[in-house]
Amino acid sequence: MGGGPAGQVRPARLPGPDVPGRAARWRAAVSAILRRHWLAAALLAAGLVLRVLTQFAYRPALFYIDTTRYLYNAEGMDPVGYKGPLRAILLVANFNAVAAVQHLLGLAMAVVIYLLLLRRGVSRWLAALAIAPVLLDAYQLQQEQAIMPGAWFAALIVAGPAILLWQSRTSWRAVVAGGIVLGTSATFAQVGEALVVPAVIYLLVAGGGWRQAIGKAAALCAAFALPILAYCTGSFLLTGDFFLSHSGVTSFYGRMAAAADCATLRLPPAEWGMCPSPAQQALGSDWLEYGDGSPIRPYYANLPRDETNRLITDFNRRVLTQQPQRVAAAYGRDVAKMFALTRTTSQGDTPISRWQFQTAYPYYPPHATEQIVATATARFGGGAPAVWRPVAGFLRSYQLRGGYAPGPVLALCTLAGLAGPAALLRRRAGPRIRQPALACLLFLTSGVALVLVSDLFEFSWRYQLPALVTLVPAGALGISVIIGSVRARRGSGGVPGEPAGGAGGPAEPPAEPATR
Image: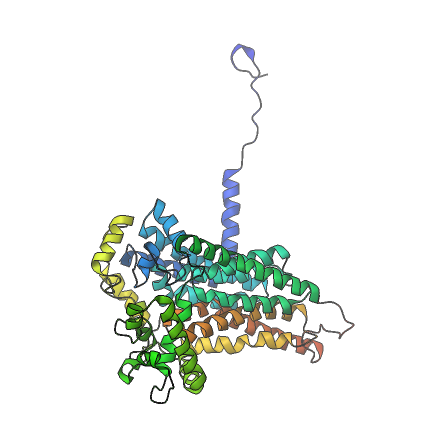
């Protein structure tokens, strides 16, 4: 027997971990996934490259008119839920890290949407095309680079439906979690309050028995209200005001004043001063709401806020009740703008240039001046504002020459998304059609609710971006429903959703796994 010193027997060696073999298996698995999902992987890679370029082109991040609200005091103008993650990141890092996290959120949204669409039966190529807009849209990239809540709001919009739709049957736990996430979105942007309606509609249509459907809808409403009530409670303790923001009380003024025909409008004397001149109306809703020369500025300067809010609310009511056709026509024109072939600024619109890449670092006096930005970067870190001109020039050219989701594509997605609700009206729609149709219903109604409610106040291209993560997935799901319906009709003799062999034939096979 062989031995060591003093004749001791050398212990037998135990087999160690097969590190090379394990690494080879991992490489093979990753390679197989990339081959199977090559189109989605290519789009993700392109989206990553664009985000890296954006991160280096505008350092440390982009500031906007409203940015300082989230750094300092918002004075109740907007919900400031964004201040939570923003200040948490700034506590341990700087503005560069804020932008990097928001770019990662953009990539994560695409991955979640892709996987969710696969789970709901959408083909790989169609699911990949559905994530192209959020990955490649230059306006989305600019939003992620800015110190603004847009990227976080969009992530919550995606997370809520993902939780509700991840399993074919929405559990009570998913209902509560989804409700909390969607409710939290309202603390980042108040328009998120509208998301409770699509979620409730989805749960009622998904069924499972009317008692269970109503119970789940009630549970979702309660969960949805929790973060909003918590935010309002915190606002009351800090400021004495129990609200998400005070701007919701008067935000219709810009829309109403821009549409009003003051020559025929009947107003009490105290509100005559609120009626704008034609020249002021031409400046648009945003200027009428916030501009220094707006007719309501003297009211805010000379009267208590409660009285001013009461007068503005009454003015809005009188315009709406006396001249509803003018308001509806102006609103309809703004809603239709999202489907235009190109993105431009119409008369009275908030300038689209605010959300376009520039070749120099952009400032917005008096809210985001060079001095204000320099003070913020000195305090929170990230370095002095700088622009990498060659890359900034490329990004601007990319954006202005079609680097965004065209309006006709969004219109097509909206129309295709109608196939989902239509399919749910058929009693005999099988699981292969019903599952994507239910997901389509939730995404479509969420997108429509967000766009319609946002445009009620004013049109802004920034407010159209949630369509990338709602209407576009709805379109992919709708197309999948149409394809599935045609195939089912061919295989069942004309009854959509009916398996071959008729009502007494074999049950449909289970849906294909997400990795197909």
